[in-house]
Length: 212
Image (cartoon, rainbow, N blue to C red; front, top):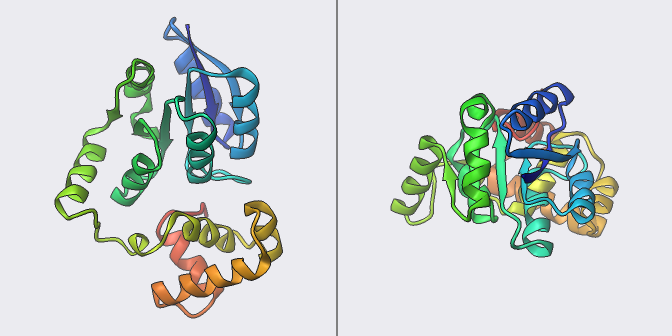
């Protein structure tokens, strides 16, 4: 049996995915997490063979979790399972260490196959994800997206600001100083040509970084 950890903040979606995986007969969900921090703790406890994670999660999002897994468990294959089909998300996920990228709408047909592929050491991409990587490579590593101007850390700060978190909360969550958070905020505003947190929030919602 392939042991899987599933990190997804919506309980109904998580339940459906668990049922889908367990019905395969050769894959078992051994741990479920509703946020990135819980997922990382469970990985340490149960040592799964594959981790399947969402991008948009509270406490620690998918990109933060990917970075932590790549650092602490570099041999653990990770599949990003998300609603985001934008090319920039694909490129960031794979460059951050993910071995698979599929959307939630394609999960019923592809999740079981994806788990088996990455467990065996392969890379699993949907057709649109493979196309996104090809376009990125052809363009010299640059996609036509405003998010390309931001680093992973800046996106983390942007997302938390858009969720209404205060600088102190963000500083504690990311283990950085309040002054550093404000520096990131000013840098994000400048890069995106925005004026204030309200515009940051609207931008983040438009880019799908936070749920409405």
